[in-house]
Length: 630
Image (tube, rainbow, N blue to C red; front, side, top):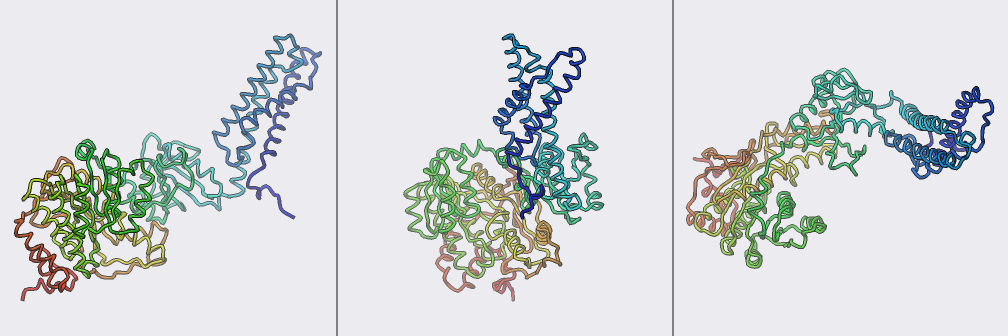
């Protein structure tokens, strides 16, 4: 036989709820009659109770309970909004009863023998109070009995504003979460020392001590637009005490304007590496690209696809998206197919080193601007495939640059890398050669403005450290790092693309723009933090292995060569590198020789690369022998 104990019920049937509410109305009516008759009976003993009173009140109340769907309210999730609905339902019924009484009085009916106003008033207050009270009493019973506090996981919330209070209420409502909120923390002096939702508000400065003295399972950051620096500080404190960190998403991402428990997620390492929002002069960008046809190469890659998304915010005549990787192009096409401006987009599957195809594209579309993001970027792969680096990064760039001049392109923005500064590998050297070519070409013609942008690693890019570490952690490790002291610069893809588009708009030709990448990040510290954020313990649950620097890999990355200086621009995060200029005819001859040689012995190819880029010194590579002086 099934056990129908209340603890086994997920939801009480609405018919049962309606029955309970009707019983409350009957009880309230009889109590109101008793109170009234106890008083009136002393003064007017002839007063007689009419049985029609509770019948009419019950009928009106039942009607409004159904209209306001009171039985559909899930009792154990009752909140202030539900209490308001109950009040409005009862109040509406009371208004109808008052009007009915007044109508009967106007028609000369005996008011006292039908629906006395005093009874209606008392019944309203008694009914409303009991209906709300029993619901909250049941909710408290359910919360306490189903999830005793000793079995719950303790939580603290950072942020005592609207978002923090909403978070607390969401946790209270979600009875299956088995969490017990103990305290708010906030840096607002006006809130500190107050009680909100029956919880104390403590100063953020007390957080470290509080976590050390109490067994806390989760810390939830629930402050909108919280500075990244403070987010990092709080996370560091929490991780020190083995407290898991969750974060509430921005209000704009709440479903229908309401926060749900499932939206509260673990904080991601990307959120701790983000930088403050940058200011973009959209008027400058808009003026530069309005009504233009723009070609983006490498359009399905991390950088290229984000540039596509950002360009869709502007009034552009046409976007031509070119990439040679079929699957990413397919997914990009699927993403864009729902956009209103999809009809203004052309997608081309092609290789930038295919001269015939590239000329066909440039001749047909005659783009006003080219944003050249296509490149081979993985250091070790290019060290092992020198011909591919030359074919794609050097020859492909030269083909596009020459065609841009031939077909009247006004701007050509090349996206380079910090690995082109004092390169130590084939990949970085190939990008530096491409920089040299477009910069020297800029000064030999007056048709196209060639602009170069340099920046470091982007957080969400394919094949970067963070997604690799995340996958290794998910598989139980080990997490592999090449060297314990290796550091890298990071910025978000969105920020990098915003700066590229801005630099392209302000560029006059020949510049190499570099971006403020902030502070470099120690990769070991990054991995340790990711492990802790995953709720694992380094050395116990997962290990870190050091594999040694890969061929061509730097220990530290640079944004400027040692002989270079910078000068400022109107944008505080964009600077111009002052680099030495090359003679176009001389460099063209060497690069054409390099392209012709690309399938030759890799050592011969790299030797010529070093002649073109004297600062190219190989590191951890078989090509180091070329740098030795006997």
